[in-house]
Image 1: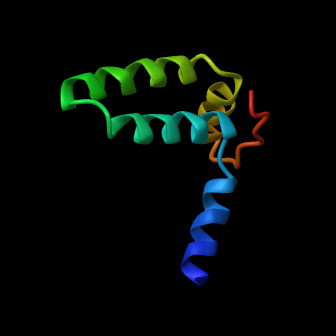
Image 2 (image 1 turned 120 degrees about the vertical axis):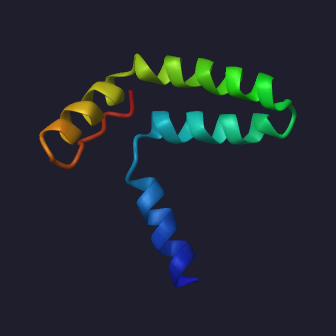
Length: 72
């Protein structure tokens, strides 16, 4: 249970935009073949790439700082 709690806390610290996108891709992958799944993942990735949190994350990474997510 301790490991589950730690993992949940880690995930909760990420951008909600990215978490929702990742969950959507994982759930949809059950219904799609490999090629369609990869194309679907690419579309979701591109939609997330335009988010404010993506810009925040890239800046924080470049500056070696912790990201302050806006969840937008």
